[in-house]
Length: 165
Image 1 (spheres, rainbow, N blue to C red):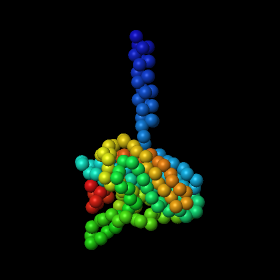
Image 2: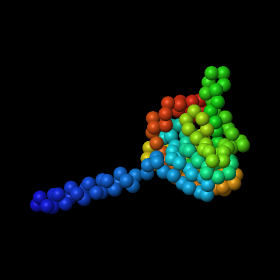
Image 3: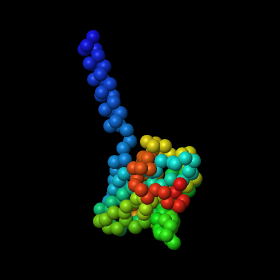
Image 4: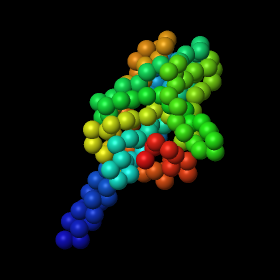
């Protein structure tokens, strides 16, 4: 009987550990040629908000490149944005030219700076959900990544900007 209980406990422990290891984590990376896309995450929806933002780090071990477009099926529109200060108010501005990823350097997409804006979400983004996002680079071409949805508190304090909620 004791052996059976210990065996059941061991199995429960293994299954629990396995589920933790298999849970999508924010620490995920995608390599494509000279580019490394690290930790693509999106902010979970707040209330009935129809918009969200995606953040990541793009490292470039090669020649200069540029993120020129982004697409996904979870939103009606997807745009590349930056955050600017205008008349004492933080605002978003679309970057029609995209984001430069300099040679042997990186581009940081983070709260309060560059980010991918998801507008007109098909449904709210829930913590631990994931979705596919295609990043289109001028030279490297398209790179498909899985974006993990995280709680806004995991992204920092700059989340309550005009247009983001």
